[in-house]
Length: 342
Ligand code: GTP
Ligand code: NA
Ligand code: MG
Image 1 (cartoon, rainbow, N blue to C red):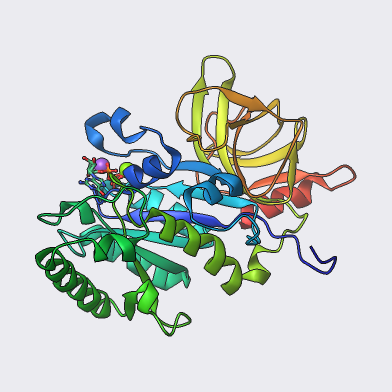
Image 2 (tube, helix red, strand yellow):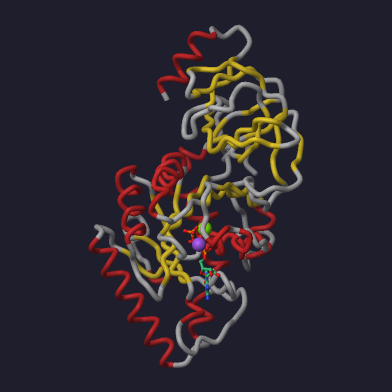
């Protein structure tokens, strides 16, 4: 590219929606994984993070090889839809750049869909609606991985009619929540009108459309925000005990670089703790951070990424708070003030 091109980081995309709308399954479809199948009761109970490199996204879309994508990938954050986990939806929506609100087309907007929309409205977060489970429309003919317009053309008149009225219903409900929305390929005012992408997480119709929108539309509307900066911006997602690594914290690195050995300050229930990064780990690309698996060790890691950090003394770290890196020559007191203020 051009030497005046900015370096963009991966957009952080939070998946929100009512319980069982298909959030995890949608990610499974993209990752070709089965995280949802391993969840107790089929219910997500922890916030997750997955890095999708741009090569994998290209492979899932019909983009020509020479078509440019300005971002190196996407970092997707899966959240639980169950009503008792509103803290995790708040955490996810607080740190993301953009959101995908998953709606079950057979059910329309539900309680936690509306709660999620309110969170996004309060925080001014732009979002896409994935109108999921289109394969459940009676008589749907599956067209695996097809762009949604093509898949819809392939359906009987009855299916098309049912699709249309359910879509209209959801558009009306969204209007009730204060959002104008439209089927994305009919959307003439992308600046004001929310894009709706019909999807199936089972047969993958509409998945290419959703991925393309995320990697093309998002950098377009938030170039400034996605411009990589060196200052570390990092949020704690979860605290875990690992049999190999001891206490680990899952973090989202939004900007900057983390290094093995870095001195960090983190908020815990017993006050601020200063410690060192013993191990800096990530899952392999397309793998869920919270899933037990094989980790990659890093000497340094550049944003945006989800990472697992092995640390001493952070058993009581508080999820949702900032992790601060103390640079050499930095005043520890100043770093502590920063940690408390965030
Ligand atoms: P929580 O995380 O618990 O809020 O649920 P979720 O939104 O992640 O939904 P999940 O992925 O657990 O899917 C719920 C159920 O819907 C599962 O049985 C999925 O197999 C099913 N499901 C999800 N997406 C689709 C879809 O596109 N088509 C069909 N037919 N079933 C789907
Ligand atoms: Na579920
Ligand atoms: Mg889930």
